[in-house]
Length: 202
Image (cartoon, rainbow, N blue to C red):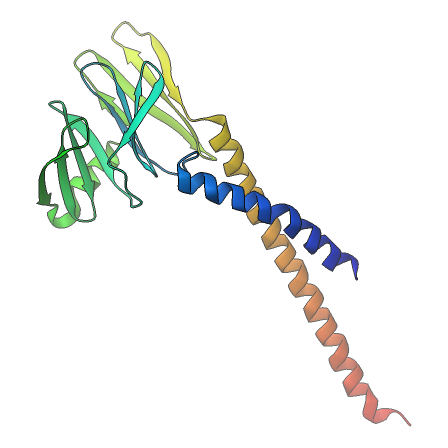
């Protein structure tokens, strides 16, 4: 067994179980890979749009998920109601996720509007902003009128670590593919060269 093939097999033996764990964690909602905005209700309860749905946090603790969906969406809270724009539709729901009304989003105007607003939410006396996003890590900061600020949420370290693991596996896979292709091309060229030299042998 040549050295390159041995490296590929070792990498596969390490990477495949990691990918399997990440896949299971993503499917079960243990980790989330997407961010679709945030909002707060009048009681200061935080709603964060993630890949598994809108996650609700009260006093910094996760309580439940409403509007569970595998598709992309953006949302906000107005008059203590959730407004979710997705797939050409606008859904009006109560804060428990119960559907009140559904209407068409003609020209995708609502989803584009909510997409632009996904990192900022403003109440009467407070502004909230989501920042970051590098390698899946972000935080939500509260800014009051007195100039003070405080972080009210930051994405879990586990999400960040597993995102980096996926990125590292992808980069190494590309590098191994390129190296393998170069080696295969060199072997093919050597075989062609030997084939061209054979008629001249006596």
